[in-house]
Image 1 (tube, rainbow, N blue to C red):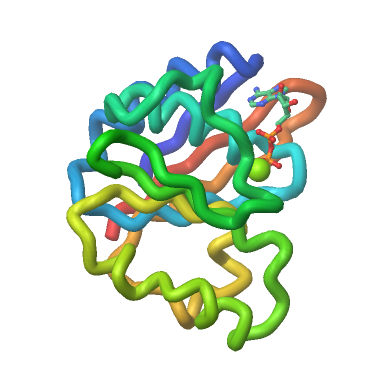
Image 2 (cartoon, rainbow, N blue to C red; image 1 turned 90 degrees about the horizontal axis):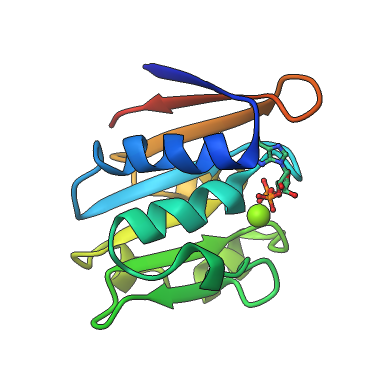
Amino acid sequence: MLEFFSGSPARTAAIAGQIAALIPAPAIVQLTGNLGAGKTTLSKSLIEAWGAGRADEVSSPTFTLIHEHGEPVSVYHIDLYRLETPNEFYSLGLDEIFDSRARVLIEWGEKFAPLLPPERWIIRIEHAGGDARRITVDRP
Ligand SMILES: Nc1ncnc2c1ncn2[C@@H]1O[C@H](COP(=O)(O)OP(=O)(O)O)[C@@H](O)[C@H]1O
Ligand SMILES: [Mg+2]
């Protein structure tokens, strides 16, 4: 398990660059943390570090559920926050994405943890007072 401490969004972006270098494709990455912890902030810089887009052009998939980045697509960015039932999860049809050569970022993945491929990275982001965050990375 790796552990980082961030004091600002900019520092989280830099940490994301370090984490990105550790995760080769293909990969499934569960992003776990409360609302506002920084899952999307971290995702933006992961996507940029993986060469799939510019951080400032990456938006949250909270309402759209799945975003594709790169040409051809090399990163899928998924947000399960709004899903409630296993049927809703299955209706996303993620099997093809999980079997692809891409990296797959899954915000709120813990909501459906038993339904996710077991071989996955888990990045946790926790509030640590004000703008401070504790970020941990567990490998598959
Ligand atoms: N150290 C930090 N790391 C990441 N985000 C931070 C930090 N400090 C403050 N923030 C702010 O917290 C918010 C995190 O939002 P977001 O990334 O959308 O969270 P989530 O996707 O986990 O709900 C942003 O407004 C960001 O600017
Ligand atoms: Mg988010």
